[in-house]
Length: 265
Image (cartoon, rainbow, N blue to C red; front, top):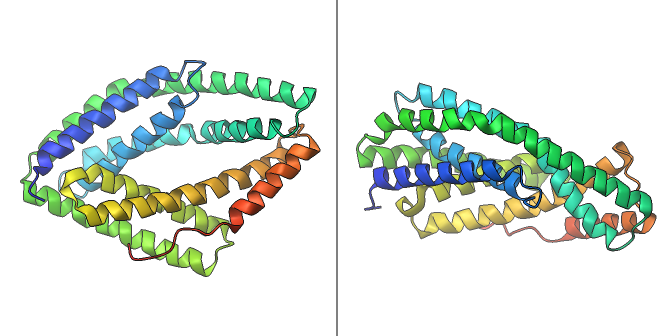
């Protein structure tokens, strides 16, 4: 905890900004299917850092700007879900394919590319928003290191309490999709807040971040498969029967796998 909170947070802020702008620039590349994913991660990382700073007095302008980041991230939700769905369906095509299914996948690739180009245009707001966020952070990062560390830790403990409560709720009702989704989101939030703290936090917090990441990944995989199975009928995807059976068996096996042990986190 002897590291300078001010210096570490400034570096994180600059790095997240660079990552976000790079991903935004790559959204239009036809051969870069992960650009939207990286953009969303960058936005989430930045919002996690700002969540801690937002607890400081005088942070109202920062919170208003951070809300705009959330709106931008939400604009990509459906497109990212479709990217994940297509990746899973490409795997299914390896088990069974048809001319109609191949044609549908080609149309989906085209639609996704158009969607990323549209998001790239929407994300131009970042050229104005990111500098404004940095300016809003200047007076907050001028606070004493002890004050910064204490504020970040308080915000982190608040997220951890919500995460642990969500985990207990889900463990009591493991078939509740809404509870599983809430737990996944809070696991993600906790992980990114810990990562934003970097060297300000000890190894114990790093282990907690890894456990939260494990929960996030496992619950996310199951959610992706369940959303996929629901969307096949909704969107009339011409999926061959053998590929459908493979996906259903995969989802069942995924649900039966043991989730990370609760442990102490």
